[in-house]
Image 1 (cartoon, rainbow, N blue to C red):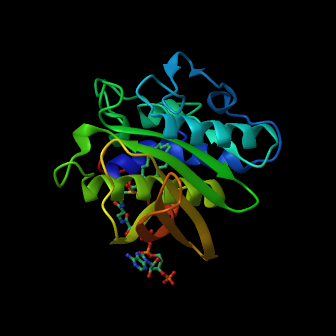
Image 2: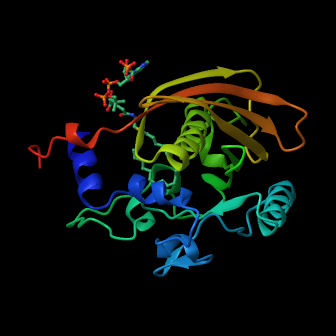
Length: 231
Ligand SMILES: CCCCC/C=C\C/C=C\C/C=C\C/C=C\CCCC(=O)SCCNC(=O)CCNC(=O)[C@H](O)C(C)(C)COP(=O)(O)OP(=O)(O)OC[C@H]1O[C@@H](n2cnc3c(N)ncnc32)[C@H](O)[C@@H]1OP(=O)(O)O
């Protein structure tokens, strides 16, 4: 972990990159100003042929809201380093962001995130594919935890910059069918020193079913504590 943090932080880490999303002026980060690709990398937050009608409808709704300025789509690449303006050297390692580690569309995590600055709110339109099975026909709880952690964490990063998950509490209330469309709705509740308290829900696309509730504690990273000696 220390090695990972060290490498990320020295390279102008992705989380630092995410920090500057909150700048009000023109973004210094070229990746986030490009809607369809970042230096040729595919933006997975854009619709593909495997998205259901419900997933597409929700996406269009937030896309429209983005046009009037309330929301902003968050591009998504399949490696953490693709989110960085200045990626650290990776050597021979080819890493993949956990939620983007399948090459086939539709079978894993299909999702798109949008952020609302005024509400300190991050939403994620999520369509779990068939390879995320837990109970027969339903999404594995670990996958639900992953998308919650990612959405809560992205919201915390937008407000506070470099953070890591310290605590994640989840109540699973109703199972999430594979292939369904859910909305992961998260916000930052409060910030106390380095602690960022977040809360979120997973609801069905029509808000009729509350699938999951969660709270997350994220800790702002103290760069002085990063140990480079393990490299
Ligand atoms: C991380 C890479 C993410 C890469 C994403 C890249 C691109 C993505 C792009 C778009 C997608 C967007 C977002 C995705 C976001 C996130 C998803 C991934 C997130 C993760 O997958 S992340 C991995 C799992 N995560 C860990 O691997 C953490 C291991 N852990 C540690 O590294 C340390 O533990 C640390 C740093 C957490 C704290 O360590 P530390 O030394 O800096 O701070 P310290 O311990 O002093 O605590 C300071 C104050 O927090 C309180 N505190 C601490 N822990 C607490 C707890 N559990 N409960 C209650 N209070 C707690 C203390 O009580 C004190 O409170 P007080 O100030 O009041 O005394």
